[in-house]
Length: 366
Image (cartoon, rainbow, N blue to C red):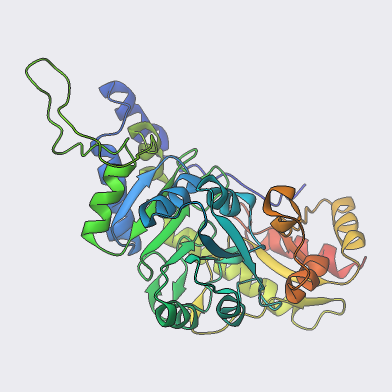
């Protein structure tokens, strides 16, 4: 079976992890700092703070912004539930904007229409790794003086108009969960727009304590005075070592994905019953997923499964969950997208010969 997901572990990972185990310092320390530095220098991200999950990164961003009960956060329904649950955690209200049917990303026009005096943040999701319309979104945000949070769980390595996703908005959140491009086993990162915000994120990720200033007293305990709520969200050295190993050849692995995506594009460009997602030339997708629209989706998924190829919707609209208030009737493109979107395998284990097998199975019909 050609699976829809894959977990990539660099062959050198055991060396990185063994060094941490031999040191016996497995909690947060210099290895985490090295990993954060690699994300910044190696991938062009800004002011990275490593945390224990992408969900923690999202929640930390909302907490730093002071999102609270009575506030509203605009987001797409085309995402995983974590994006909405962190809003509810802050006792705020998720307000769902519509998406662009051609690619699954949030619509800037719909964002503008959803803004109220209670809107505290705009949270965008780069669906499948393809960057949202960030210029248009930032224009809306600027017009109303509302900060933007990017949920970039799919988008490590994505580029928007020459700038790395993770260097554009005040807050960008990444996931290093097991099946993502780069894994730490589980983990994430919050990238912020200034050194001051980074200091705040570092403090809030560890109980609200400034570890650099909280030196041990003569009695042995750190001296500190917590002034705002913090969390136990830090990454540990063990996970960071795995991340450092897996980051070694990230760029070449990403280019391999893009070559597979190019192959899919050419093969599916005019295939009856399918319609590729529309991607613009001014940005580069990270291709965590390769998506398309298909006719008779259930038949498509079953036919490919019978031929040894996994296909999946991955996630459908999250507003169908009662915790978010139920299906919104005004998300016209979302409703249409929900009926036809599907994804085929694209990951580190997919080379061009394997991609050819995927295409052959599709061309056999459904």
